[in-house]
Length: 140
Image (cartoon, rainbow, N blue to C red; front, side, top):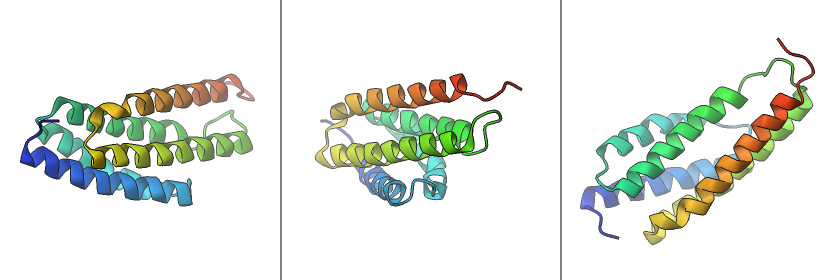
């Protein structure tokens, strides 16, 4: 991989941030504060990166964090709370594992290895959101 020194610095910082976020989510999938804290930093790194693959990774993670929070952190009207908690736990655990895998791939310098991680994350996220929407107790 041919990246500039600044991109390598960004990759090292992002690796540390994603490892911490992933570990915290695995330890307690309900604690998403750190994830939200790093969101703007990841977005800033995406803008300053010169490596297209790194920019994509940062853009993808930032949008995914935003979307997950938008859809899952608050109460969803019409959805059974137990079902919502089950989905939250499942998705935040998956996100935690995925962030750790992405960080490990960054450590190896292998940005291309993350494609399957992205696909799995998006598939499971959309599948669970669709299930929640189809299992609403009532419509508003």
